[in-house]
Image (tube, rainbow, N blue to C red; front, side, top):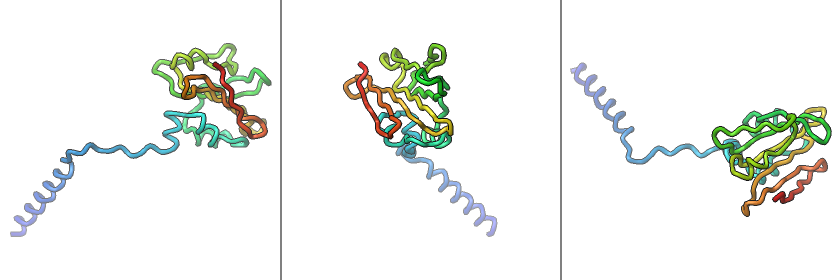
Length: 158
């Protein structure tokens, strides 16, 4: 009798487990975190709201959750900067002449690249400024620049 109960219990348990996986509803993926959204679709608004003067390199890495695409040299003062290329189409690559902080205008214009971010750090490796390039709703290329006084200046390039 004990053997029968054990077998019956096992069958009920196995039957219940197999039924739980037989739903007609598609499994829903968890909602993306804020960091995942930033990585996939970095917008000028997100950059302006989240990236701040004085952030450490580690804080920038944690915010953007991806490594920079290139370390480049500022054409203004020869300081090292990080360049991020967001929304790259498959196979996209860009190497600036002389490894300078040159913007990929062609990639941004033809859609090979969604946005490009340059971050300049001071001697203490804190954010000194950034420049972010992306298209606005009208399809115009916009430069958003964090100035050393903490204000963001925007200008249309095209």
